Image 1 (cartoon, rainbow, N blue to C red):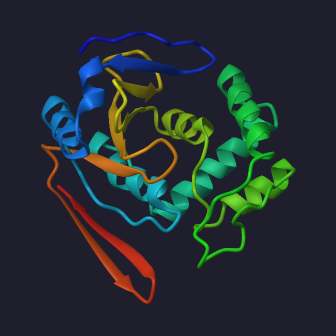
Image 2 (cartoon, one colour):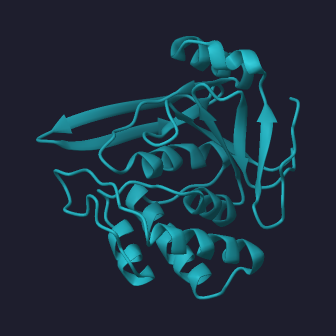
Image 3 (cartoon, rainbow, N blue to C red):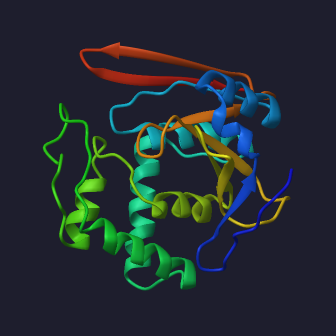
Length: 218
């Protein structure tokens, strides 16, 4: 796979080039191309403010790791980011702190039926951490991807429709475990890209606006 290195010790992000022609594909053709090139398939998860955590929760067992639940993952991320904000975790922690400071000045996005946080500007780190601890608040910002990469020692490849490259958070090291997510656009929904070798059944049950994901990974 050709790699266009944008890696920096502080940024912890690099890019894998796909080719300019990818920007001309329909969404179905683009996703089929990603599926064939990386031997993965997309798995549907809900879009009620927890899609990032549901996706990572499903993906971690594919690299031999895992957490108790998507909610536990969210809280672990928030706890780690608090540590970064307090000056821990070196250069990576400093970068995450900078991104948190920016997020504190940005309107939150949430699932309106579950939270009143929509369009709220946190203003302070404590208010930000309190808000993003809630399941309804969407993930926005690179600091979430960096946090998962550091916590679980994995690279996270982000495939975004129309992009002619893949954005990878982590280390430019081929031997490092890798998981991947799919986004139809830059700003919204995450979905996991499950490796072909993993037998995954995702059952989405909607009852009174509540969505539960049941996953079996073999």
